[in-house]
Length: 307
Image (cartoon, rainbow, N blue to C red; front, side):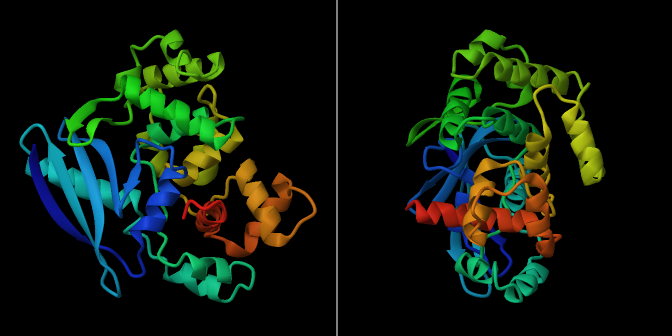
């Protein structure tokens, strides 16, 4: 296996462990792994499968990340650059969180929560396509079940790499799924409607009738409208992709059942808050509602013993 390493500076404060868990969500996730202080996933770098690992090399006021790329083919400078840019995107290294910390310090509701997970950066999926498929998979099922069928999708159709851990799979790109039959996706545990939505999305991304790159230039309302025209994508899925796929930190997926439960616990409410009530509750945190969403997720993981 060829191997190359780069060291990336990270903004202070930074904790890779918290950020990796906010990205992977559940320990069952085999695409995004966290083992003994090391994050890893298989990516496609310069056209070839490669194992990307990230370790927090230093902490304190000048944190750094050591990023290693391993591949069965020689690692080009382009592949290493792509890996570095991907890590910066996935772990929110370019986001200035100082205004958010100032806001949280003055907020008695979220202040203790933010202090508890200080160093969490806002995670993003590597691609909007991966975000959309995650959203479709997790609709109206538990997150655990959604993660399980996403693992199966990667293991069945994702490009693979054989390393010292065995066979690892990347998350499939649209091109990997465009020619796959709907029934083959359904066999993995997806409903017929979800299998059709994923297969059609892949086809439309490949033939460019769905232009996901265009979303970056749209405002939130325009992006939600564009995403909602995609078969199988409703309001919750669109807002989920805004936050996790496009990095829109002013978005709180208000229809997210887990987020509703987390807000109910945070505010000691008698019942789950409605969509409008959530918008009211989260408005003092604007434009960082999405960051609070990630902190609430970690708080739930901590309560369940995952952290």
